[in-house]
Image 1 (cartoon, rainbow, N blue to C red):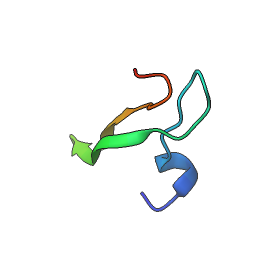
Image 2: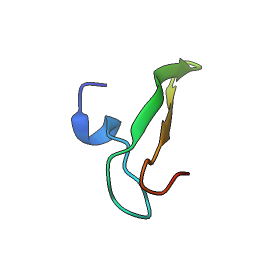
Image 3: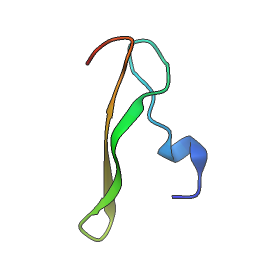
Image 4: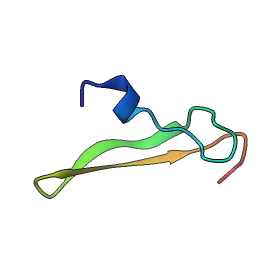
Length: 43
């Protein structure tokens, strides 16, 4: 999780950084999940 280009959450519509609601957490042994919201798009 040290690579910033991998952990950055970017909106697919406006290409801006998303605000993380729930930070990265492990889901099983190989996967990590994050919940983020776009303040511009309100999705």
